[in-house]
Image 1 (cartoon, rainbow, N blue to C red):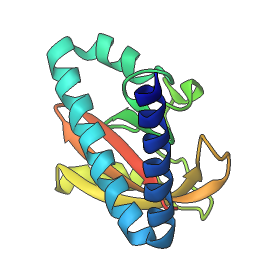
Image 2 (cartoon, one colour):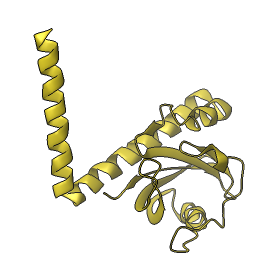
Image 3 (cartoon, rainbow, N blue to C red):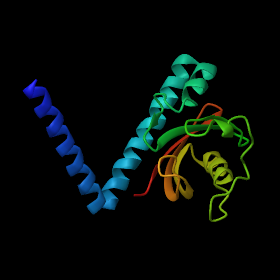
Image 4 (tube, one colour):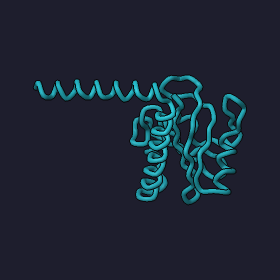
Length: 158
């Protein structure tokens, strides 16, 4: 029992140290967040290809599912801007958001659509509501086109 408590205490101390380090170095935190966002999108694409569109989109729209981690989640859009899956807000699913604008008036979904026409992957920045803090924050999102859909996952700049 003591070793279990020691392990828990060590984990808490390590997590606190990592958190303190990322607060001291926001660039390192952003770099790590970008790495995690890209990995989450790649995981979603692999899952989509292995289980099929319907099952994958259902799972990717589950706010407690395997494609949501803290303030990071996957979104999926078709090539017209219709949201097919959204891990943080089910109200987004099924609607055309091609003209949706961020807090600064940037039509970021349209930008995403245009980006995948010229390249299959890329990064974009915009401002969006963080589902954890409920605040509008700068967000950097990895976007990748696979087949006839666009997968995206991003990190909020801390």
